[in-house]
Amino acid sequence: MKKILGWIILTIGIASIVWGLWASIDIFTAQRPVYEVFKYQPDQDNGQASDSIQGVPTEEDVGRLIKEQIEAMLPPTVIFKFFNLAAWGIFMMILILSGGKLAGIGISLLREEQ
Image (tube, rainbow, N blue to C red; front, top):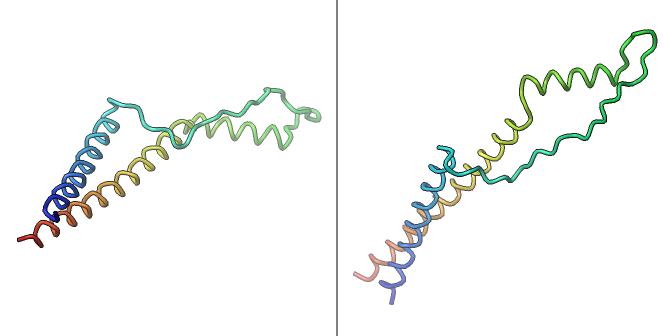
């Protein structure tokens, strides 16, 4: 009975490792889209400029200009894509480590039988 259970656990462990690596290769080679854990929702800015006194920009104007310049240099979609890839990498690390642990348990069950 331990031998059958050992083979089943070993197979599940190896299958989870292989699936995780295969899915990661597909995602990092852009054959499959990244799973979106973090989603970008753009601000609904109405585009109205605030009132300025005699051409002097207000604090809202300066803040809006700084925000536009930062978004031009580093679009928010890039940041969210990085976060999604990092979340996928962490999930795969957990999956591969747990698959290795399952495979180790399966191997130890197979060794006990002998």
